[in-house]
Structures are given as C-alpha cells and as structure tokens.
Length: 306
Image 1 (cartoon, one colour):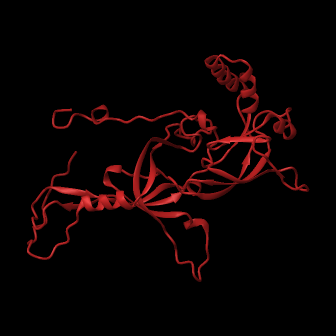
Image 2 (cartoon, rainbow, N blue to C red):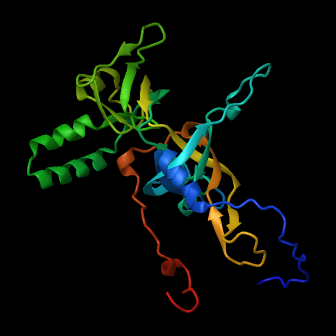
C-alpha cells in the first residue's frame, strides 16, 4: 500500500553551475581499464530451518548457507584497500578488503562472488581427509563405466577417488604439500602422480598412499591431515555497497526532466576465506542451480503486456 504524499519540496532555479555525468564514459572506462572477472549471483540457501542453522550435508550450499549461480564474464575496476597501520595494532579484521566499481547492469548485491581471472595469489591451508560414500562412489563409477563400456576402469576410479581433501579455492599450482605423520616426526612431502592427483579444488590420494596412512577400521572422515601452499585466482565476496545507485539526469539544466540514468555502482569486497568457511562437500556433489529468470516468470506483466 502506497503512502499518500502530503507535500513536496519546491523546485529550485536551474541557472547555477551544474556537474553532469556521462554513463557511457563511465562504462567505457570500466570496460577498457577493468579486470576480467567471473561474477556469480548469491542466494541464501533454504536448507536453514526455523530452529536450526544451515545443514552440513546440504548438496545445494555445501553447508555454507549460500548458493552461487549463473556465472557471468564481465569487467570491473578493482583495487585493494589499505588501512593506515602506522602506530596501530594490526589484525585480520580488516584484511583482504578491496574496492570495486561495476556497471549498473551487473545488479551487484550482498555476498555475490567475484573471481578475478588471470591473477595469482598464494594461500596456505591445513586440510583434513574426507571419504566418499562407498555406495555413491560405486554408483558413479558404474555409470561412468557403462558409458565408456569399460569395467576395468571402474574399480580403479572407485579406489582412487575414495580418499580426498578439498581446498577453499580451485588450485592453479601447488607450491608445497606434505602429510602429517606425528608430532615427533618431520612432515612427509607428497609427490604428484605417486601419492596424489588434483583437479579444481580436490586433492585425491592414490590408493597406495591411502593404505599407508588410513586406518581401515575407522568409518567416515578420519584425522589424517596435510598442509598445502598453492596458487589460486583471487576471489572476493561483496560485503557492502555504500552507494547502491547513483542517478544523473539525461539533460543538463532541466529540473523537471523525469528521465534519469543509473551510473556505475561502488561495492566493498572481501577475500572469500575471510567470509565463508570451507565447504564440507566434494565439488561435484553440489547441485547445479543455475537458472536465468525472465521478467514474466516471476513478476506480473508490465503495463498489461509481457
């Protein structure tokens, strides 16, 4: 229900100096000077109940409470935000922040995910062993075997993909990786191909290495850990939008002109690992929720027409 307007501020004369903005000039600057990024739309996952938090076994959000859909290639102007830390105590509270300017058409909102292509950052993590559900692994492998017509590869796939670790970011290059072998022993470096393989954010132990470190009597995730240092593409989440919209009139000096244009928006970003915890599920177990809604799918027709 709309509230009736009681009064209006009287118009002011238009004879004074004015500052006019050109949307096309702003957009051209962003496109010519901006970084190439992958923008993903954020949705809150409805797995959260009235009295419970998000579910750790949810295949939509992976236990994080957020779903990221519809990846889009675009460009944004981006730069890091530094605080003056001289004579001040430093903390991680304001670490990893960046400022972004994007075109209004991007429809940026809180928690949207921004991945900056062709960038390299370094991250360190301690990862804990995860295990696939044997029934699920078998069914997936049987399906792959049926499609390829090969049964010999099936058991190999089941064995080789049963034990794995997952990183927060997709791995571009591993700089160091070693497995923990007790508080009194040095870390044991792992060798690609011999001890493990990796794709995207999943590190898969080979069967021979898994047999060395895993107690088969235990069920489910086990306390086997590795340390890893790797390169990844810089990734942020939108945490604040100080100016969600800036409007400028299309004609200078005309106060009553109703036509306005929306200028590029400004957003504050933060590195993903400062915002969300690591997902608890393997990447290929997360459901694909990509869907581009058109207006008349979710709204009444505009002005009586679609």
